[in-house]
Image 1 (cartoon, rainbow, N blue to C red):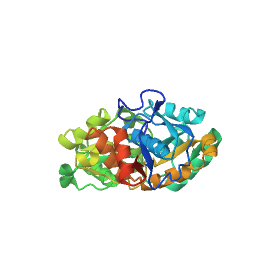
Image 2: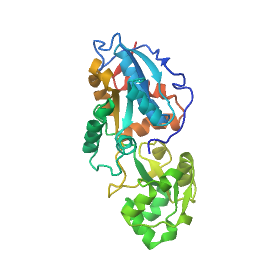
Image 3: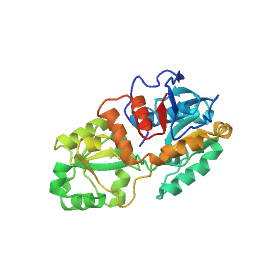
Length: 314
């Protein structure tokens, strides 16, 4: 699911663009433990992951490193390969993406901690070191407008299943093409919850349009959303609880090229406090600044790190 997202311009498009910010240590990076290091940060090409990549770069910069910005690489595979091969040193990755897409497992692990531990242990052979995960969980969900939910009172996906049996015509849903066909998307969800949505009630469209359709029209009662998307609150949507825990956990965690981590183990002390502060709610707020307010991801990352006291302006 985190393979998809909005492509942004003007952020990391030049391979190895130097990060030139004048920042100094706040609560992290004291003593500048990365002084003399030359490190490259990367990310995938959607808003949230770019913001997270910028955070890593800014923390490294404040800790004394020279930082090259290779964020906004197309898709997941290119950023993943950069970490494995060492052409990039650090990024934020998602546990579910690694477990299912990279490591080839069909069934997710229900416990977020056990999912992260399994990914951490198995990915060592690929030269990838996983640092502790955040509670930021960018997974699939279904959402409904508060206006429509005033009539239906849906709280969980089991409620949707019950409504689909009682009144099949009422359950219309807007989804992306990929979600409509993936086993960890709509077909698997229908099977897990014992529901069968008529094909005529399923409308396929781009991700950004889904939010508008669910919020402002009656063409879709429900829409596929990502739990950290800033448009959820901006468009006044209710996210339905996945009460059977069908969707995988996609917790964000820093991944480091292992040779880099062996050389600079201080990286863990720099990034662990940042990850502990990153929650799904924080991600929604930061993503809204980019996707709703149109702010630059680098500025969003820098402003948040300074507001949290992790770094300071030089």
